[in-house]
Length: 249
Image 1 (cartoon, rainbow, N blue to C red):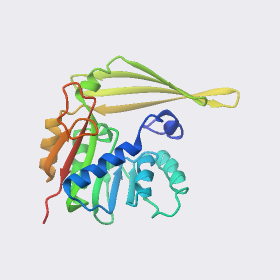
Image 2: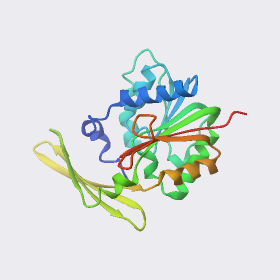
Image 3: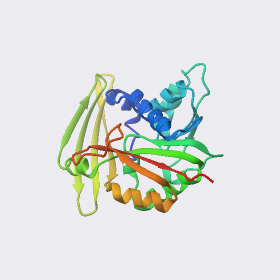
Image 4: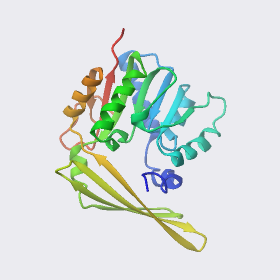
């Protein structure tokens, strides 16, 4: 079973601690810092569309892309409740198969979406992101750091609500630089519980490696920072934010 199939309908319940408004604030701080006027934004690996909704309500024209039809189904239900805004365009595409009808002013990918890409898919994704970005536009994404992922090895996490009980088990292959999340999901079904299983895989990238890949894809003015800030990341940082621009013509 692929990632985010069984999990899709419970994702929002299990991630109530994610502050999407804070992410949106940070992106707007980046736009202001770079002196950009942004109208259209691509939300890559948009999931259930929570961040897309926040940005749409702030007046941006949004393109929401995700490889999981189940996650997009949740997102579209969310978008249908938005009033007085331009409805986001929804595309069911893998990240390395991104294909837009035109260009956008900014591209975002939140909550370590890039970590889900193996080397070749990451290179192709960055190439396509460069292609569909307006000259002068910005790409912003974040990753789980090597420090965080290596320290997850052997850990077990439990998330639960009234309707779902989720057990995460993590295992790291240090030689292959991969972190595996095995997830058992127990969901309420009347008087009984149904069990499903998903495996998520995150690839471990050093920041310097990503900078090199961004340069090869054609991006310039590449910076990376500690979480939701503009300071250099600390050695024990859990999340790093990257910004990269497509050169002006």
